[in-house]
Image (cartoon, rainbow, N blue to C red; front, side):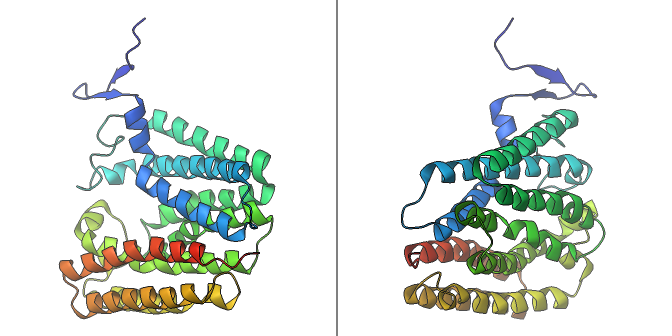
Length: 303
């Protein structure tokens, strides 16, 4: 028997799909999965005592990473028909015919179940429960709501904000004020970030039938207002870790500068909603989050 990866013909016979590691890895959206791991690790480190339990951290990251990757695969299975209509997603493994939908469904389900099992068995039940809530809100609420209402952005921010909570409860065994502060920061950050992406690709999203705010807000006023309001709220929320004793004064200063910068770019995008301004806002959100979490970790108040 050949050791080469199995090649299957599509229903049209025009394309072949190859179940190899590269395609399966692409299906897990590695960049998004990596962000889940980074925010989970940040929550774990901030909740940990002076000496970090490396094995517990590893189990947390493996379990969360597998569950997160599995959820991303299942999301693509559910939205495969819509992805096929969008230029930016038509080349993904399922709509391009490189992976059979049933194979993707099985792959995503296995990753998710294995990840949750690892968290429950090797970390603690609460970490598994928080991750299970992440999976359910992402797949059963946010994913179908994108076809129905612009409120999906609010709901979608919930699963995106939960990974650092998983990390926190994995280390601390309970949900504390620091975990809630991280949740609020992540929740608020996602609104200007996701709205900037939706604004850049609103025509593509509209063609696919997504009811994202920029798609149903043709004059952009509501979108711009939401970006500015949530950026302002994020500026305030970013200062809370110092106020509750999670991080020090140096972090407070950095958080204020980062939050002010993000608000500035959000206001610019609202004042002049050109593609250039929106791209600058998107870049600002991508700088803000790792810089904030890095500053928080470096200026952590030792428990």
